[in-house]
Length: 489
Image (tube, rainbow, N blue to C red; front, side, top):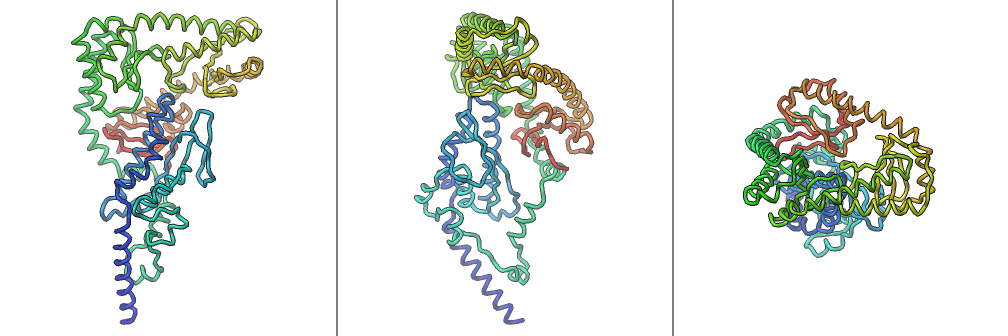
């Protein structure tokens, strides 16, 4: 027994010494940021300005990744769960990889991977390798930067002790903790248990700002006779208040420039101008001088919008009465000028092709134009997605062949939207939620499925909360709870 104790004591000393060596060579937080620069460049939301869905996914995944990296740097941090992340990465030639990758024709690809490492270096290498990015630049840092298979042979790898070591000492086996964490999937109730207090604290702190935001929005909407005020991105409450204060100051200083906004919608976004949907866009990085110019140009924008509507009608006539629409939630964010050029080019192509459709044969159907696709498709909501480069003969065959299916999808869409609205109302009432909403990337079918399952549960945690249906679990900075639509019970 005395012999065993001496062995264990020696092993403990060896472990402490080796850990000291490892800690002297671990990556610092600043090093990790530098090493991840190529990754941040490839996924930065600003590069996805015209793709709202992809931008939103990257923004949310970056928040979760930053939280994971911060936890790794906390002294004595032990409790962690494997974190699955999805990023849209700017397109490049893919290398062989074990992660799931789906390539699109939009110049980027979706990459999903799971983080379960306990040190910064391994995490950085995981991220870079998962996105098929080079790890050579990590060698310039004072740590071992070889990929995992080689790194495991160095002192930077976690020490793997025999199971008897943990039996004798009573220390926790980290590998056993990891295996258990991977086996136990996060459930809705367990996640709410762990995060309710944090969400309530943030929500209470944000309540005065939420009231201020509502007051500012109502005052400006009434003063300018606006139809609505919106935000393209999920900025925090404080940021939104700041933007409204800025607009309010402009209205006070230059009331004459905002006289042409009656009945319009103002959208705070990354660029200034008028959107394809006819909304006034105010770039959040622009100063009052730029906003003033946009307001002064509104009469010209309204003239261009009339010409755009004429183009849409002309295309509709050429294609048997099908309605040309623009769907903000599904299409890239385009300016009025960009959308006009797209319509004009497509209309000229149709005129040159001399396609023949029976007049009004496609009335009641809808289509959107996409410049980053190559083949036509039929959306589950019933509208056709038509590439601007689509061959006219192929276009005619596809629309005629899918017309009946499109009509059925449109009818189903109307039914689903009614069901979705009813379920949102019922869920809000049952759980006494202050607000229940979804991210733009969540479909009606997903929202309906989520709400139906929620209504089968008893969730007292949700009383008075703001609940967002998303693709992952998260507590937003202002206390909103995000849960995945396909949560586990």
